Amino acid sequence: MQEFETKHDKLLQAIKAMNDIEDKLVDLVRVQPHWYRLLKSVDARVDKNLAILRPQVSADHRALLISLGWPPKLSISRVESGHISDLPNPLVIMQGAKRKSYSNSFIALCALQHFQTRREVRVRQCNLLGQGKCDVRLWAIDELVSPIASRMEHHFAKWVDQPEFIFALAYKITRDFIAGIDDVLQPLIDRARLVSCSAKEAWVSAMVQTLSRFLETRIFSTLVDRYREKQMKVEIIPSWLHLVDLSLTYDKQMQSLVSLETCYFLIESERLQGLSKGISLLTVFCDRPEWLKIWAKIELKNACKKLKIDLQDDRSWKVDNKHQAGLHFEAEYEHYLLSTREDHKAPLIAESALKIAWEMIERCQTMPAVLPRIQFIRSTAVRFLWYFFKVLLLRYKGTEIHPENYDEDSLSKVCVLINAARYIEFRLQQWSDSVEFLEMKVAEYDCKNGGKDENIENSCFFEEEIKSLSELETNWLMDIIAVILRQFETLSWEYVEQAKHLEEAKEGFVQVSVGMNLAVSIDFLDALDALRSRLHALRMTLNPKDFLDLWRSLAEGLDHFIFFSIIFSEIKIYDNRINQLETDMQALFLVFRCFCVRPEAFFPNIREGLKLLKVNRDRGKR
Image 1 (spheres, rainbow, N blue to C red):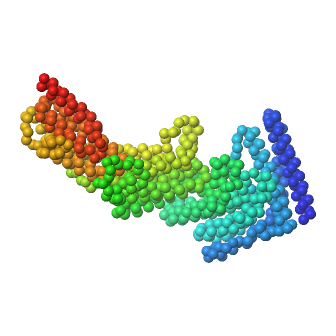
Image 2: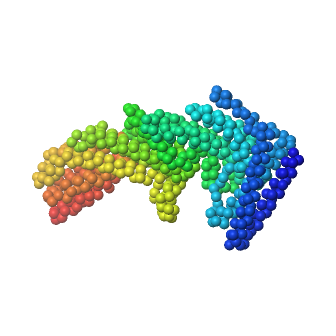
């Protein structure tokens, strides 16, 4: 014991001497930065001392751990049976001289790491590299993990075909020792002046990296080789997905074990980046792009399979009727602040598709690197959304709507498709507005444009998808509008022809109340009744925003048609025909009265045309 204390004192003296040298070098860099050759020469000599000192310190520390009974024996029989009990922690039960010796050895190793960290910071500043990433690894913790990792990997090898046991044992060991490590080692870390370092984080990070190395070398590599064999692809997919599920669950368990309260001195982005880098098993995909592509292909194929199953359900295109049931009793004004699927009157399959896409996005959330995460989302969730857009388009092509054979059921199907597109567009915009997707969009833009500082305020992560959905909605709405206008033109053909007659016939009228005691032309009633019926059906099935655009566009089309077909005609219109035309137009306005207070405001050509006819009539009388 006396020999150990003497060696420890000499070690501390050596570390103090190297720290004094580092202090001089820091001052020299500030005062004489161009003396880089002198700095390089001193660093070379210090490196020689470190090359001798660190292996010796690590060897002494390992010997001390063995004398303390570390690592403890692992009871795997209880893991296989599902009954997991706590493991004894030698660090907690050590007392007296052993505790003092271990504490001194731990502090010495931390002090050596602290010195090395100072050197790295100074070198980065000299090379204008800025601050490095946060590293949660601690040499002293690595010395604890190394021997226990060897024993764990011995047992892991027996469970290659039963990975759930591998994850259970890894979680059991990490959980059982974390409290003791935090209680015993965190005060020693603080004494060693390792600012912002956490014993918990270092322990969890080292354990995760141990499991990650085994999965990479023994399981994922085997699955990749078998996946590349065509005849084995189908068999590998369930195993791959199961392994990813276990990895994601394990990542969440590790996150729950780690407390972030010790990282006071790091900015948020550095703290999260450094921490997640150490405690996520998905790091294996960040380092191997080919594996990431395989994972993305498997996830996409599985998602499309889920969607096909949902599409086979007869209820997939159904829409809840609670909004439709109360439609007749709604107030004069509708609410256009839509948020839920029911508000958009979207079918169940739209929610199902969004849920599948979001599940794929969530599966890569613990992936530490941003660009691989973006690549995964683009290769899975985004491609899946385009696949669903194709489903919507094919369903629309299978639905024929035309004025000659007008089918209410076909109209309803098209409205459901528009509602689905509108709802998905709304949700994608919501996702794009989140901080996470905004950061990914900026990172993606910087990667593509070499970090050029350009304005990207008007772009979002799902920009192309939202644009495509908007075009689909517009095209389908225009098709419905064209069909209704064409039908109105067909039904009002005789009325238009009659309006051009020179005779002042008074027959062909029917008494209809339009606010005045006037008669509406019989030939115009069929067109008005069909228009009212179509608008009522559309209001029942179409979401409020698109219905608003639809009836306003219809009003614009009718305004143009009637003005150029009748009012703008060069045929002379007699006095009673002007009155009749005004009465008929009031009936047309009445159809749109339930959508707005002043429907005539949406028929500017008709309104101004009637005024012009009256002016010409009055001039003729003079």
